[in-house]
Length: 263
Image 1 (tube, helix red, strand yellow):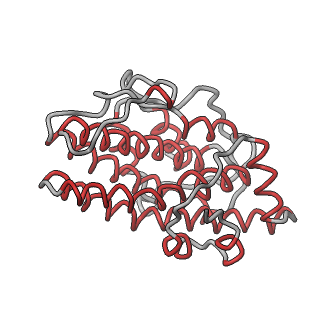
Image 2: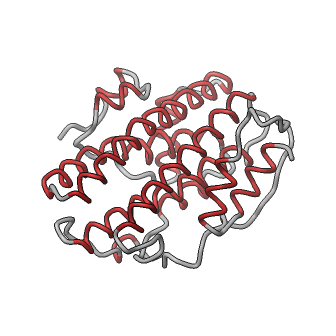
């Protein structure tokens, strides 16, 4: 089956095991064709399991990572982000037609890596006697995906370059807390986050690349369009501290780094 159709099938899959398996199978070397022009329509949300229960962000309880339950709640929250990130990458593949083949290959790679991240975190949860769905979660990441469903430039601006870039900033802070806890499970989680952070830099870089490509194609000023899209879709305000080194590796310009609110 054609790759973008297969990406939509994986997107619609509610079972986490099958979603991971079908996403990992989306390899552009497998001989399947790639149709960049076909316009696919799917008006429903992505497939996802009945749990976790989705609540307002303010209703997600905060727990200390120094307790076993708090550790699992923290890892669950990151796993939920990664599960959403699988759907975000798959959505970028099937939803937006008429992009270069390299665009689809990039986002298929991102989808496969997000599936790997989710599987690593879920396995860690299972080692602690929990599983994905055992804690409540919120749907903020998917809300932005839905808001930008008609505009690929806004999608690149506000999902990889804003929401996922926040992960570059947050991960070292989470790792520092886990190192302070210092238990074997905490240090194992630090190692998983090392893998995730290294690959997330590449994901944000892909978003940066295609954002600037789209701005050049469509005659948009990258900074002005970003501000316009952020205001239109109520993107979260950027707050320090920032992982400036990771942001530079991910392709943010000196002007963008210098414009970050540092206080």
